[in-house]
Length: 301
Image (tube, rainbow, N blue to C red; front, side, top):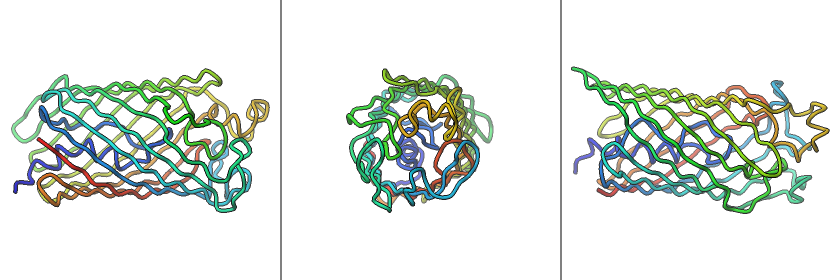
């Protein structure tokens, strides 16, 4: 069996599995690698994340709002990718989320200490616009656009909300430099527009920087994911109180820098395993959380 190309063709699937598929996430939904024509990838994964600190504005505080103690979530996700041709592909993903707090205190908006359900359907199209091969490396430039649509009929307000319940349209520019010795570096820049008919969810600028290495026996990367919201107010401010307190959480200015480390190992010609770790390095109106994730990736060609 030949594993040499397996990490490349599975990278997009890996990118979906190694970040918690929630509204606030560290990872881009696409990578700088492109699948071959007619390649189909199906991936399933599980993420466990928890936090007992959060940024009230930019100040890191112990505990969580409403004295919840530690808040934890389990996320089960399914992902699919199809290579329309060698430069154009499409992806789709859907997560199921369960979140709860250790003190069993009811969410002031949700009315329960545990909330679960399907979150948002994500569909993206990615295209490579330019590729230049050098003697010992290559450069690829491309872009992606996609939409996240709430499908689970969940409430976007409250501390234990599964997401902001906003329809999100994202546009991303992607650049990737790959060396023949299998090292690569990737940068992404994007804009995220978010709409909800009941309240305003701030739009955001997205950045992503990744370095990694792939080999026929494994793939590994380290990535920084950055979000800068363009509007919104701080938790604990008078604006926050006037807007309804916990009910106004989707309207806060959410900024963050998150670090992700991921590993992928092919075990059969059509099957591989992934694992990853996420942590919040700094933020604004966001939980300081850690996450661990595992997945299985199936590839057909």
